[in-house]
Image 1 (cartoon, one colour):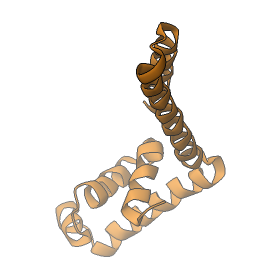
Image 2 (cartoon, rainbow, N blue to C red):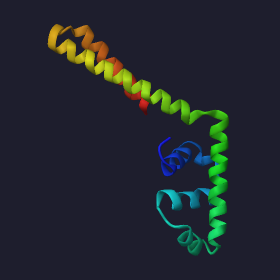
Image 3 (cartoon, rainbow, N blue to C red):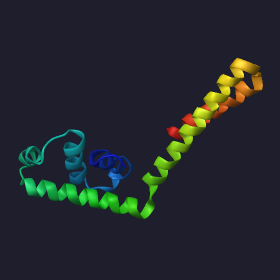
Length: 121
């Protein structure tokens, strides 16, 4: 995946519900709200190292689940394929408009676009 923050937010999006409330809170403050470890520690009344330990355990727990399931890896792979399908449907639609104006082709490309969009949700 791209960078550390992107990777961690993807893990959180997929596996965040598996974390404890404290892990979720600290993880969200650190990665999504961009607070420093010191700021989180001050607000929580614990040491900076304590905050870091909670976040590291959360990262490790989510990474372990991803390593076992591969859900994010499959999601990203399938997303690329869905994008390719949508692009092909768009190209077919353009060719149909320019050369054929076949109503059935229009219906089919519209259906492909809708299904590709549904898969992206």
